[in-house]
Image 1 (cartoon, one colour):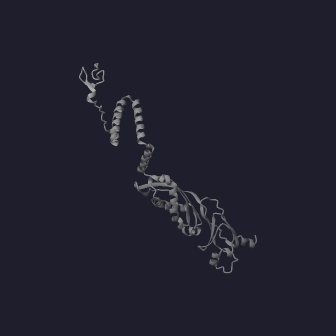
Image 2 (cartoon, rainbow, N blue to C red):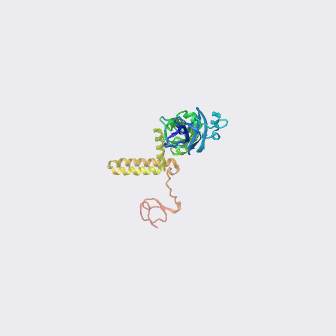
Image 3 (cartoon, rainbow, N blue to C red):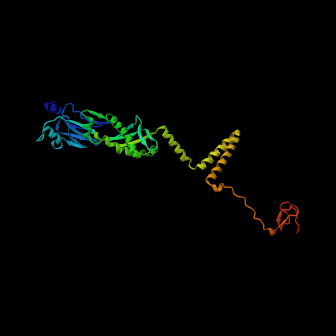
Length: 330
């Protein structure tokens, strides 16, 4: 190997990152102590951003594409290196690749109950869980605020912070949405979208963006769930009159299957009929008022006569007495 070959072997001429993982957020390109040569090729793939760092200072940022590293496309690094008239010699700089794709199917859940104020039940404790997805939206801010000078960072390095931020803000999102506790189960999508808009700015200062926020379940306290069951039952019953008839038919069937229960059932039915009449009278006084017996119109005195047998007043044209049945004379 000649001297030139030994010299060139200490230079980096191709810089790229082939991500084979699913959870790597930042990868520092390993130069192995080598220097980057003038005109080196930098390849940045889709969903990647490359950032040049010179002695701890962030320099130039490269989006997806292929670049030949020269003074023209490294203005910040050129200023930091004081390359006023360009450069021809190798240089040392760190290259960080930031993954900007969405990191999907991240789990979240409330380790402790979340408090919310409900108009009907007052203070209510809720438990909830679901999934979310996020991405790096500002690679420079992310390197400054979250990454530092590490050589590598995975999703695990930030999900703890994101989860605590989401859960702490969930109670505020629920309260501001003003969705009643009894209606939460029917409004998961609406509440998730509202929470997404409310919670996303809370991680924006880290250079991150919340892309989706899905609520899979919200668990209500036992007393609230019992109240929901009672309201559901009332909705199923619907017409109370028909429900009462159905209950009576069920009771009749049960009593018929138990001979000793017929007497009690008869008493219950009698009491029920009495109550029905009483209620009907209360709601319809005219129907409950006793009707006076119709009085027979009194016949004029000139058109009557007395029965020859019993002396009862009878119509003059009657041939038989309606009281005693005796035949009357002409």
